[in-house]
Structures are given as structure tokens and as C-alpha cells.
Length: 251
Image (cartoon, rainbow, N blue to C red; front, side, top):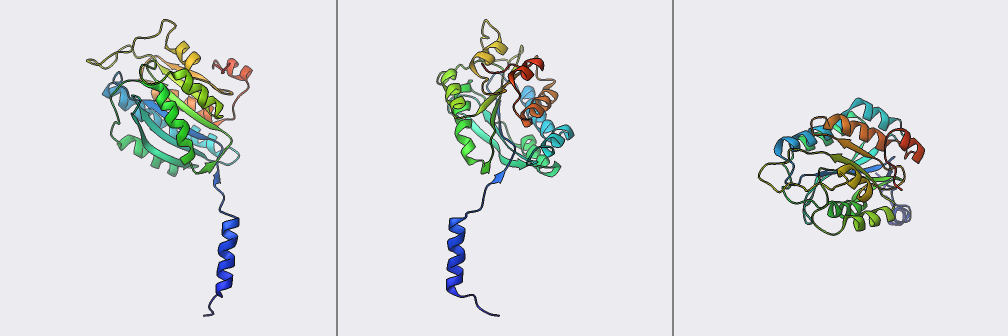
């Protein structure tokens, strides 16, 4: 067998240095940021996890992913509670088919609960904003999907975190959960006078085509997340489209 000249090997290495491998292109990068503060009891926690797992593997969602320009999205699942409590439960995964979606869902269904603490939406946004750097893909659309059942009661002001996130070009969508039966024995959220949905609209949700969904309890979590994910996979709608669909665009 002929040996390869050392000069040829060095030339090949030099070319690789000049032309590094390109990161995979996806249609969107999406962080699911789920509230696991102390107001969320164990049954509600399970409904959340099961709902996210069901949404990711839903045939309608997989069909929508396949219909995109690149036929793939990158997703990550984070649980959050207080200012120092953010945990990556399922790390960045490129989903393009049922197999990759099922692998992601299996992690969600088997991983233990991360926290039972206070509620810092601001810290969740700060953590998520920084974590996009670890996605390892290229995309023009970055979204943080925040689900929660209460207001920001710990950490820095949520408006500051939101504005920094929007300034970075990241869209924030919301799922406001009306939890009328918080975990007994723990501190319950004092709901804002304007109501939790309006609080999310004014303080959390933002960016082009952003929207908010409202749930009256945890029982229909799976269907709500499926519909939400379908909207997030699609290209950001114009404000009039969002209004027509009953969603709240950012102003």
C-alpha cells in the first residue's frame, strides 16, 4: 500500500482549518422552559411532562417539521424554579423524524423532577437566552416557550430579562396555566389583579409573531402544547394573522 506523503496530509489539514464543517441548518431552535415551582404538585408535574412528550411525538407535529425548509428543528427542555434553579432535563436534540422525537420524549418521561422552589421567570429567561449558544446548529428563528402558573416572585425584574432576550433577537411565547388548586402546604402565588394571562402579555411574551395560550388547568396540557408547538414550528405570523387566530402579538 502506498504511503501518503506528509506534505499532502498537512495540506488536507490546512484546508480543513480554512473550511471547517458547517453546523446543521434547522428551521427553528426552541427551548421549552417549564415551571416546576412549589405551587405545581406532583400530579400537575406529571401532566406537564407527559404533555410535552406527547406533543413532540404527535404525528401532526412531525408532519409540520418535515414540511419545513430544512425538515428539522432543534429542541431543548429546561425546568426552572427559583433564581439559582434551572436544570437542563433534555439537552439539544435535532428532531426530524419519529425516532429522534421518541428519544427526546423518553428522556422527559423518565427524568426525575428538578426543583420545588420559588418562581423566577426572569432567571429562566436569562438561562435560556445564554443556552442557545450550545445548540450547535444554525437557524434564523430562536424561541423560548415559557409555561407557568404564577408571577415572577423571585430574582431580578422579569421585564429586564424580557427586554434583554428580545434585544438578542429571541422570541418569547407563553403558556399561562390557571392553577386554582396549588400544591397544598406550600406558598401559593398571589395572582395579579389583571389576571395571569394579562400579566404574561405585559411582562413575559414578546417578539415578532409571539403569542400566548391560556389553560384553565393541567388536564388538557398535551393538546395545548401540541397546538402551541404547531404554531412555533411555522414561520412567525404577521400581527393580523396572530390576532385572527386569537393569539396575542407583541407590541
